[in-house]
Amino acid sequence: MFSRRNFLKQLGALTAASAALPVLAETAAKKSFFEISLAEWSLHKALFAKQFTNLDFPGLAKKEFGIEIVEYVNQFFKDKAQDATYLKELMMRCKDNGVRNHLIMIDGEGYLGETDAAKRNEAVEKHKPWVECAKTLGCKTIRVNAFGKGTEEEVAKAAVEGLGKLGEFAKTMNINVIVENHGSYSSNGQWLTGVMKQVNMKNVGILPDFGNFCIKRSSGSEWGGQCVEEYDRYKGVSEMMAYAKGVSAKTHDFDANGNCTDIDYMRMMKIVKDSGFKGIAGIEYEGTNLSEFDGIKKTKALLERVGTMI
Image (cartoon, rainbow, N blue to C red):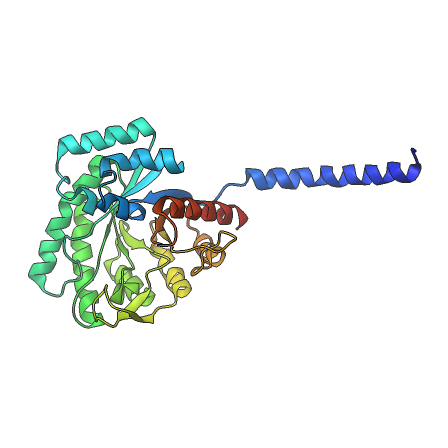
């Protein structure tokens, strides 16, 4: 039976729903402050097992994960840096799939923080073909390592020189050279930003990795052995963001709500946003409880959710 009370009740509900529509529309329309890329290392197990190749990577990123920006790892096309035919084929795969190349992560070509001048200069020379490769592929950046043996001061001095030399070469091709916090001194935010201040070049910067903050291992090396001392990851990323030309969104495992279990992504991405960053966050899944494909999808969903909430 119709009554004034029921009418008013329904009218109130409609008014509340109407008021909520603009809020819902605004939330749906809100875009993240960063773009998402896929780091090839997220698929390193499958690549090493030869389930697919580096040439397949761009298409896989787009078709399997809906990601249109990629980050290569040189280990998966180690002898192809100057192979024009191969690079042309790779570019064609990117074009066919509407994929954009962002950076190449360089390993195995020596350390730019070597205190031995001959080794350091050799490392600089070995990185130059990858700068040229990045230019050919349309990448903006190469990621390098600033390891070295010696005291903090000695390695810092060597890294300033090594990065400076490579940075000068890369500048002629409009390519960035960025250091990832990859263990030892490089995972100390104050040390790495101190190096950047001394290098003082616009095209030399940092790739803050949310997960790599072990500064001392039981083995005494950058990798291997148990981590016995860690730098505060949130402090480290906060310090590094002034020089960031990308961020590496590391994940290992997730809880029932899809949150990363060892990194507070809301807190971390707020640090990133507060720095004024508007670049690319690269997915780098390294877990073992999920398949690489599922881990990538979980990381992407987490980044998309957090990106629109902050």
